[in-house]
Length: 351
Ligand SMILES: [Zn+2]
Ligand SMILES: [Zn+2]
Image (tube, protein in one colour):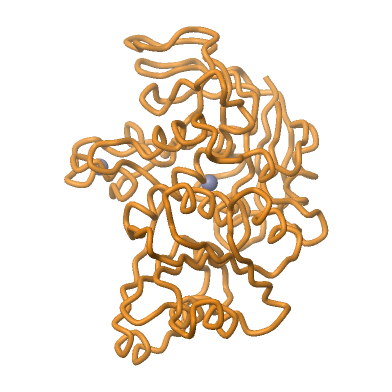
């Protein structure tokens, strides 16, 4: 089969490798669509060493069809369309966090039988743990299913920092995480969603796809002043940061929040952040991190995301802006890396 193999940094090659064999409790999947997530870029940009030795495979936003079943797999049929919950989130199943349904913070998250495990969406086939394979309703396409990881992250952050119908939510960032979150928050019933971003095109898409009621373009001036103006000088009830990276955004997120408000951090920061604790103290802010997804009171957040997309209330299509065949994966990564010139939000690769 053909698979993209990562040799470090921008060195990505499409090579011929054997089709993997599903072991007990595993499923062989013929992959149809795989999204490039912001986290796929950390090594590409040289920001973070890979946990794998080269060449490795990656791609954790994937969907396709069941092509083979290992021993002891029940409830799935050959040919059935499925979405895969990222294998890097597999927990040990026995620690206190896994037993509480919080496999996303399992200390050995992403290890199976002592081996580092991950999804390999950028290839023709992948072997997946059966419990991470979720059947897709007939009205959810494999392309839409690529966004389930992002939608489920949105479900997770809103479970952790619940909104009320009276609340104004400010979202920093207009990537796939920001847009999917805005849509889920509006479906969830937030009174108003304000989206803050640096580029005009995704802000326009945000308003057109139901991800924002108001948008604030950073190039038009100080976003804190703009949000204060939109909230009668109060600030947002909840602020969710989705950008991360090395800019000083956490301080800005705190400045956007009202007295007694909440700041949630979804972005993966690659640099320490300087904050003003006296602002947090005087406003009595709550700052929470939100890492990936798992379950909430026993309910799978990934399945919740499937149901929300299937209900027709989330508009996934406008968030998927680019498609590339596997052979052009280097171009797909370049488009994701430079969103300003490509106009990309979510880029999907097809093997
Ligand atoms: Zn992701
Ligand atoms: Zn565990």
